[in-house]
Length: 109
Ligand code: 5GP
Ligand code: ZN
View 1 (cartoon, rainbow, N blue to C red):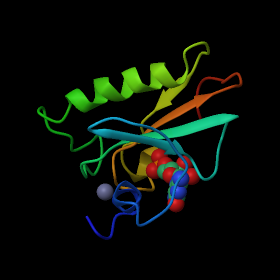
View 2 (cartoon, protein in one colour):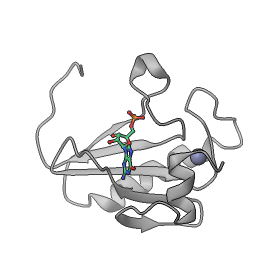
View 3 (cartoon, helix red, strand yellow):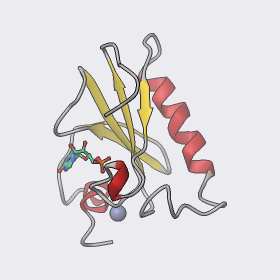
């Protein structure tokens, strides 16, 4: 989608610090990191939200978790998917936040 920020990162029209890629996913550093390491993992395919992902597309979520493991072989990490405005989603292209390098509290804000 041409008006989607993360599709623009996938196509290279918007620059990002890419840390990993697979056939279907791309991982890059969040521009406003909330932890010493804060990476976003997104599907290359435009999917608006975890709220709308289809059964066929849902295998991507497992692939995202496996990539998060690879990016953090020795540390604990927190995975977050904000789904919808009330949950804090601001970019409507599915993404998984992978946060690590500090302790995290619960419940989240
Ligand atoms: P959300 O609030 O939708 O769960 O997360 C969107 C994330 O995208 C935020 O953490 C925000 O910092 C990040 N972000 C927004 N614009 C850009 C950008 O242009 N480049 C990168 N690398 N991250 C961005
Ligand atoms: Zn998109």
